[in-house]
Image (cartoon, rainbow, N blue to C red; front, top):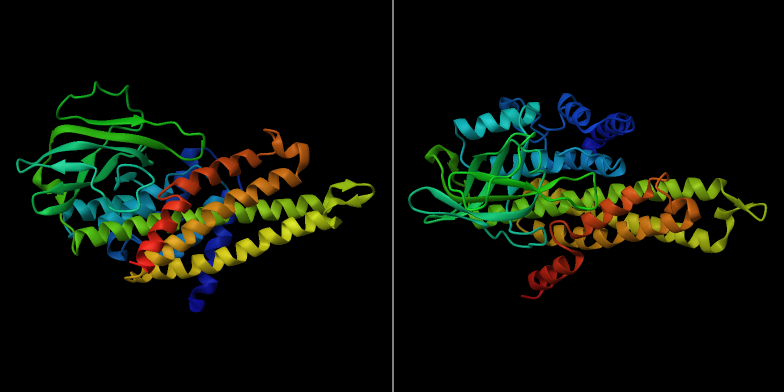
Length: 366
């Protein structure tokens, strides 16, 4: 990947500059679209850049550093991957083109809950083309105007394309009403991420909106989940790196007993421990990112190693940052709480550390 180091440095620099400025969610989305981030992995023929997950990961890290509130994970990571995993067609190609330009926001319902470590279909499509099921904690479904849901059909797993309610959606309809897609916002402690439950009861789906996978559906859906786990691990790394930088800067200027507190041995050890954790995490991420970008058959092992390690590491590094900032670290104004909330969510999103360690044990010692 060294031949792309300059490209990654440029991409990182632009992202850090843009995300370092205050902006609301709408502005962030337009910035992401104008910078070409949303279509990084979309083919050039469909108005994208045609690059790989390695470049997407650069943006993901900077989004974590900034705790940016932008639905990048749902659209640019999961939406693009799911759409590219199915057979080409007018509907699929149109959605990818709209994704690349920022005209569409997509959410993907792959598993019945965020801790799922396998591609379980939360919906069922019967022989008459009617869809029923429910998925909770669907990332970015609160603002999506397109939904892609994994469904079990008579021929196996399929991907169903659904129009969502508009972003200014009214109150949810009553449960049990047929021919309705119900999207209900699910609030979480981390305000920088959006979630919603998605449900349908006996919903009639046009045949053109039932998309077949190009390869083995189970393996393909699993690969999308691996991509999601690595994406969240990259976000967690960005959070931890930002907090370590902020802590080292703070302890260098905060003085007690006429000395910078960074000169105290205990403080040095805590900062050094954080650096060691991040360096190891970086190695795990590089392996996982390369495996996902290349579509390696063993990408699941690398994904679980990175996700399990960085899920815990980010929470530990941010917790240390809060402690070493002293009393100010616990105030609302310091902003450290935003990083802690996001790190805690990242730890559980798309598989907790324990879940991925169990998965690793099953993969290494079947």
